[in-house]
Amino acid sequence: MLDFVLPIFAVILTGYLFARTRVIDKAGTRLLNDYVLFVALPALLFIAVARADPAELRQWDFMGATLIGIAVAFIAGLAAIRATGVRWPAATIPAMAASYGTTGYMGVPLVIAVLGAPAAVPAAIATILHNIPVIIAVILAHDLFAQRNGGGGGLAAIGGALKTTLTNPLTVAVVAGAIVSITGMPLPEGVARFADFLGAAAGRLGPFRPRARPRPA
Image (cartoon, rainbow, N blue to C red; front, side):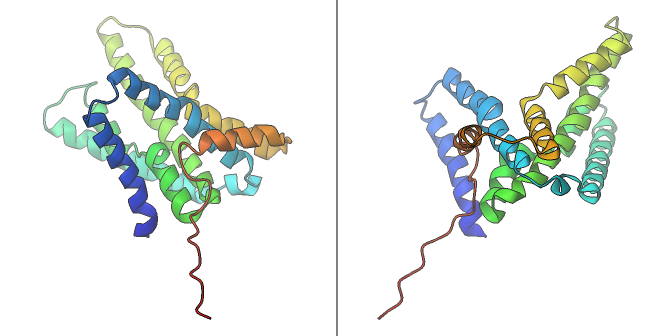
């Protein structure tokens, strides 16, 4: 297991040390982050879900357990921070931190490295389940409490929350991949290879297979 996990954290450490040397400025760091968020990781999630059998997407028990876990963590985080005297809507930020898993940036590379490309499908589902309810809850809380102080109306808050969440590149990628998988839409080989190339920057597309040692004659 360590042979798979340690290289990923070594990459993170390398990036941190590289940034600390100031070889790359803040603009360059933001560019790299944006590339992963808007290009590489969406491509990886899209191609993994698009290639999946539709039955793999109907993991209702997994979805239910994930949503329950998110809700429990969110409520517990909210209760804990409110007990310290933090007021609304600022209290929703620590609650989000308590419940929002890094299934995209960390989960996908880890499960792919250990279990192979098919493991990206449940990771993609978990990414959607974290993105939609948690982000919507936090945005709604901020906007609705701002409304009390003279902000916009409730419908505007709901519309803004849905727009922000549903236009998230990771959400769009998973939904697009699910449409391809469920409809059986043929995916051109060139498009699939293009997505593979882009996705390789976000995580390995298959488990590492060490070379077998030659047997003594």
